[in-house]
Length: 384
Length: 176
Image (cartoon, rainbow over all chains, first blue to last red; front, side, top):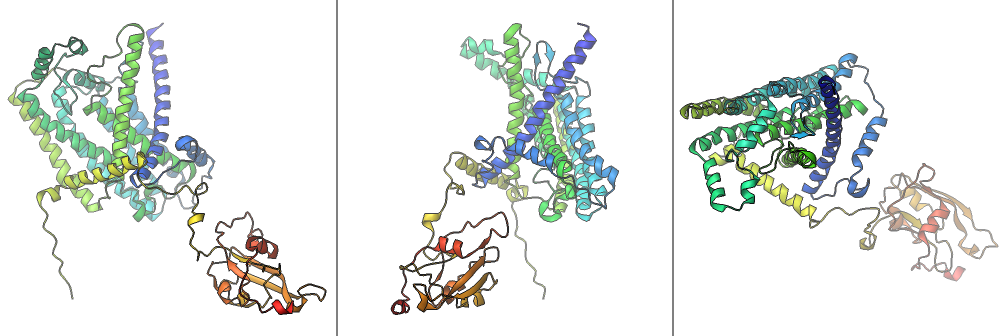
């Protein structure tokens, strides 16, 4: 086949399949949120629709589709219409650059393999704030307005620490290309624990040569790696907190803050408008988890699990395993986000700003210099 | 007078919040796993599981009319319940018992006895005020209907819910 049409068709197929998976994951994350919150509070949660309540997302979707889309008379119509779409689009765009698997039938499992992947992610996620701000402003009502203001200041504050916190990752790896970042982590271990000895594969384990295996592991542990581990753990911590703040999750859900602001920025929305905000929020959670997984938790890789490059059905099998690994990691992070939400109380607004500007911003900034110092002392930059 | 409340001195662990966050996460995951394993006491699944058997003797459910052991309706239409009812849920139209009737000596009975269950507040004053022990709050609590008319319990419905209850008011016995 003509390589151009091959690229177009495979990209289209990947896009459609990924979009389907993500939308399914979004609706089931909502169910998971309700179930996990119920279990944490010693309740049962939705259990009427289908076995164990598993058809609940379908019922929810039907309800939201059939509801009247009520538009108050006092809103600014154009921006009121456009705001929910603007909050749904960015998280879905982010998925285009995330490598969600190694390869299937020789086709790399990333929709857009671009060299500025991480920059693209930051550029697009920062657009997410427009949906919230426009909704708050166009609703022409005080509670959404307050929600929109809070959201814009919060997102701007945490975007800084988010961007700065990943710079040590690029200092160490030396690339912005997300598939390359995953490849690096396959060889050197996940960035959250970068001690995997280079080149150690399942062949060594299959040989049961214990001294050789121990020696291989010992080779992976060096003073430099230990020292680099410190800035990476700080990076991970700051980045995860920033993702929580960017996705408006507890303990940073001030834009919604239903106890104070009724519903926050989406108070005046009903029916599908509200549903789009709701889905956008969960899609942003999935996109954020995907970025964390790709940058710090090794993406689709698992130690000792080969990628999908092998010939024949073994390659397909391992390719599917890699895709499953990615989504399993994302799901684990989503569970963590839900878990945190039902544990922590909300920050007060001034505490949130203080934390962002006085603590995380400085921490992320200092962290860059720590990483740079360690790399300078050992005077080498690992090739990508 | 202004009272200065001294803030507690926090140590470094408390200032960092992280230990507190961690212990909070441990608590919630314990509850999660406990409920997941089916060990935590959870909400009763209402329509299937009910608490009817454990309802206490003094439970105040829907008010009903009762008949005595000879099949006489015990209400004599004195209308005391109608007058005391705080939300005015009870409406009674009395009538004279025809002379041909077996219980003609009682003289009066309700022609219509209606309780609007949308208005009823289950206070039990009607039961308390009744000199004839004719109206009782029984244990029915799930009173539902699709229309307002359906929620009005008429005489027939009230006797159906109430049934027969032997009582200690026997002053009519010799007049039967």
